[in-house]
Image 1 (cartoon, helix red, strand yellow):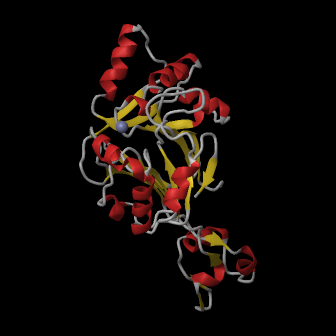
Image 2 (cartoon, protein in one colour):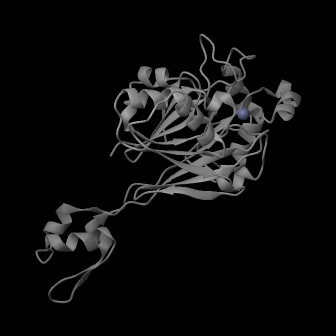
Image 3 (tube, rainbow, N blue to C red):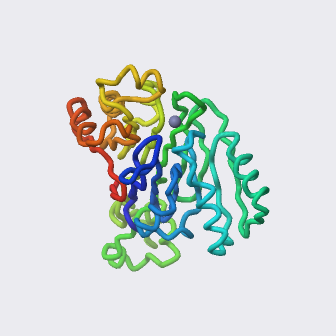
Length: 305
Ligand SMILES: [Zn+2]
């Protein structure tokens, strides 16, 4: 299976411009395609990133500021026009369902596929989705309106068979493979125990990704994102505009890096930049002074967990 990856579709805040796209990203994890936020123009960015629209099964919306969901009605309409039949799950705060329904009501559109809404209302970390390969949790953030980040965590997969070693034990039959993959030792016909370690390899390490946009500097996040492989944390402003960050419910690059350092994450991606700072490398430079493995994310780039 392909390694989990994150493709940034847009990583700027507020207004879309010729150069910059508002927030949206695709997380590819264990064969799932998750769309996280859906700012204006997301469907065009998906085309540019060559991501097949039909692969998306779940959409996670952090909050109802327009730069995080204005692209959603367009995308849902396109799904319909392309003849999508597969249902889609949308995880979002209360209100989004009403907004979408009103549009489709007054455009007299009956979608060819169904939308299953999961309304997020909790103020604590909560599991909101699970399948056989992974789990997703909401992370309460501190912003001007009700906002969640999301934590995506792979599940530990089964052990891999060491066929070369297995062949050396004639008593092992194909029907024993299931137990071996689950970590059980093997007992030969003459009662000898062969330890599982000898017959299998460790499963691949589990990976995790945390998405935190938009939020003020908020220390309770630290516990919830501890040691993730990749953290995307907003850095709308630079330290010189810290007051503006406080006032608008956002963070500075320096604060994002402090959170990353405290949480001992492996890598920090910055984003949700204000258009006031045309050079995104200045965010990276500021963050690196606090947390070395920080990078300013860029639209249409893919990052591996
Ligand atoms: Zn916002």
